Image 1 (cartoon, helix red, strand yellow):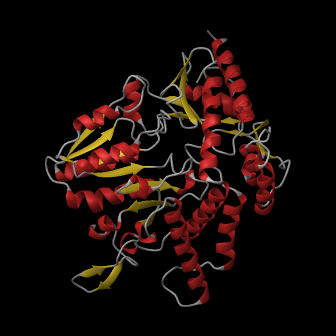
Image 2 (cartoon, one colour):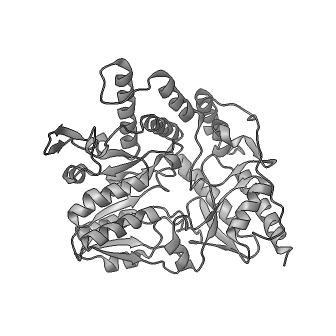
Image 3 (cartoon, helix red, strand yellow):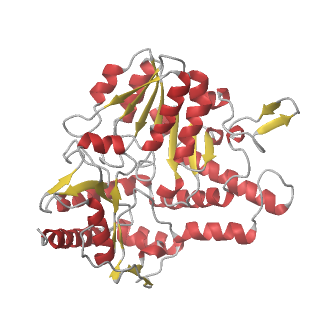
Length: 453
């Protein structure tokens, strides 16, 4: 950070929302607006009242939250679902015959069914609740990888993967003798799908790929990648953390083998994510963790194990968080994932176009075109200004929340020739006004740092 710069300590002041919208009110407003083809009221304006956290001041400015790729905000219905669980039927699941335990078990398993329906899994038993997507990937790495990989087997990844999709496979490769191969970027700064096809072989046992990049905003043709991998008998693990919250994802249509996502990026609580796995694969996998709940019978010299998904959910799970995730899925489903996706695509183009006007800026990832669609985020750098300085100034002087750093993608940043970048990321409750406020604040930030040159 620049020496001599005066840094204000954060201050917070909550501002009462202009309107308060209940779920019933949301449906009423949304239905009335759906009949209006031309309206200045966007999906962001409609849903914004459902998110109390957005209606506050930070450092004397209206909060503009553009860090959704890191974590999304939670609507009131999710907060109420959590509160209701702890106030009304807090109890452990699967282990009691009394009313509270039965109620908690019903709601917990109903949440699993909601997740299954949301991604169109064949059965709720294909959904395993985990702490987060990172744990879900580790589950596959250790329960499937250690049992199925041998020396010389190949795992194909891209250099744009999140650390949580790289490190577990590095550890498993060290234990099994498997080999990791990485696909680099093409001239459009998108993982080279042609290279995918080129390096696939009978040695390939697993492909690990993101659906949407959390840095490049690129969307991989995951359907094609799965088809190509299956031609060689390889399995595919999809990191869908940046796609499941923003678009329709259908695991049966994709013919996905494994898919992971995280609740906190899809308007649900932190501390819970999920793994989707085909029933045939999960049934053949040994346990990941040992303990209560995942067993059938325990003897002093051996144990037998429960069927999936219980086999992979040792100990007391995140019950309230699962119920909160179920409430988030209800909320997203009521809006409609296709509607969310369409709105965010328009907002994404608006963000890219506006950001492109900032002097000396470098935006990473593909340029949007008729055939190339970006996710609703932009990672960028401004010449001679450190991204952390940009993020700090935006927060302290303008109340704009973005992220700076390597975004858990250090290999990708090294490939791009930088150590870090700034990132603004949107969700459906953001508006064009948020983007305008961000761009105005960013221009002010750039002018401030350039004044020292």
